Length: 332
Image (cartoon, rainbow, N blue to C red; front, side):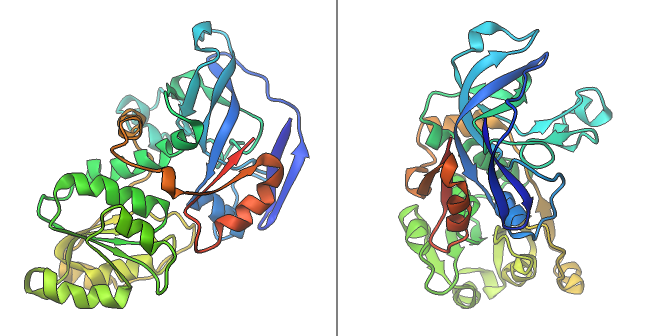
């Protein structure tokens, strides 16, 4: 089968590899679409060190089940599914306490084991969820689930002033989810002349401004001008946390979502003095994400800015690094 294999930063090769064999309790998926996310781009650029070399990247996967292993019902064959990305033991303390994403024995599809930038991918049967939508829409399930986990761990209070620092895919998904919490204002912070600003406006942001403008705006719309109640840090940049700390009010919340792979520095004393709560989160629950997509409560069609075939995967990754791109999808 054809697969895209990343050997080192910017060294992504399209190669013929042996088709994987399905095993007990697992299924084989014929990949229909896979999204390029921030972690994939960090691997590609080299800011996030590869856990496996070469790696078939891609974990935002949708496809059809074409083969099942022993102990898996055959009636799932032919169904369109999405897959969770963590392969866990199911037996350790974390798994038995429903903290599967922190299983110390886990592997992660597209990160520590080969992922979806290929014609076929394997995943445990317990990881899959059936979907009734187009594959290009279904690939948003995994990142949307991550946003749901964010608000599950630390939901904003209705009437909050919310700032979203970053306007990429997770930022724009966060905007739509956070609107369900009846905020007073949602401010999306973009870089100067950002081509993504129009998406934030269309999806209902109250203000779309630069960082400096957001710092001025807080003087007008937040109590005593002291900052935003809830700041989502989704810049994908090591400087993001430091900027979020400047935006948030005393005793406010920073929801940390970036996975750029780089160490960060920030004013620790400012964090302590302001008594800021920093809540980090990553993978989340698929069923509510699927419902939000199927019912079009969260709209993603316009977030798909480019689509490529697997044979064009190098061009797809290069395109994904451009400022005007939100979600680039590869369709094997």
